[in-house]
Length: 241
Image (cartoon, rainbow, N blue to C red; front, side, top):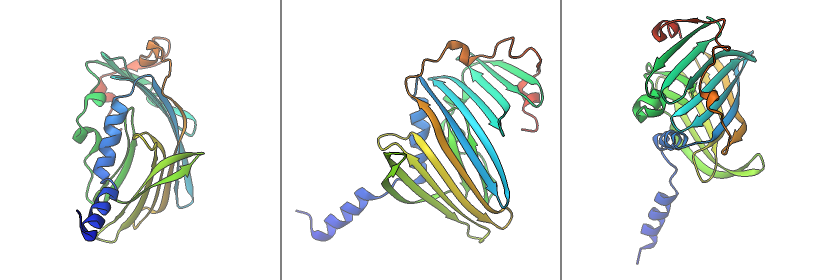
C-alpha cells in the first residue's frame, strides 16, 4: 500500500498541468490530422491607445489547405495548396506565385513549424493554415490548468506566463481548448514591456465546422481571381514579408 505521503505526491504528479511544449505539440498534431475542417478567427490587438483588427479564415483537408488573412476588413493575402501546387497571392503587391510540390507547412517538423527563431527577450504570434502560435524567447511557462465554463460549454483553460530575467517585460497568456482535444477556441495575451508599453491580444474562434463540405476549388486560385495580378517568383513575392 502507498503511504499517505506517497499518495499525495502521486496525486500532485497526476494533476500537474502540461508543459508549454506539450500544449504546442498537442495543437501541432491535432490540426494536421483534421479533414473537412474550416474555421474563422477574429483578433483584436491593442497597444497603448491604438487598436488593430485582424481576421483569418482556414480550410483543412489533410495536406490540402486554404488560408485567407484580412486586416481591418481588407484582404492582405490568400494562400492555398491543393496537395500538389502552392499558390500565394498578395493583395498590396497585386502579385502571385505558384510552386509545385508537397505542402511544406503540413509536412513541417514540429521544430520547424512551431519554433521560429526569435531574438532573446522578444515575442511574436503567428496565425497560419495549421497553427496558431504564441512564441517567446525565453519560452512561456505553464502555471495552471483548469476546466471552466466558456461560451456555454466546458473548456480546458491553460494559463502561462513569462517574466523576463532582465525585467524588460511580463507576459500573461491564456488558452481555452476543447476538453477532449487540442482545438483552440479562444486566446488572450496581456503584456507590458519597456519597449512596447502595455498591450493586449484577444483571439476568438467565431465559426468552426468539423464536417465542412469543402469544394476542391477552395484549394486553388482561379485565373479569374488572379486576372489583375502579376506572376513572380515566390522568393521575390516574400521579400519584405
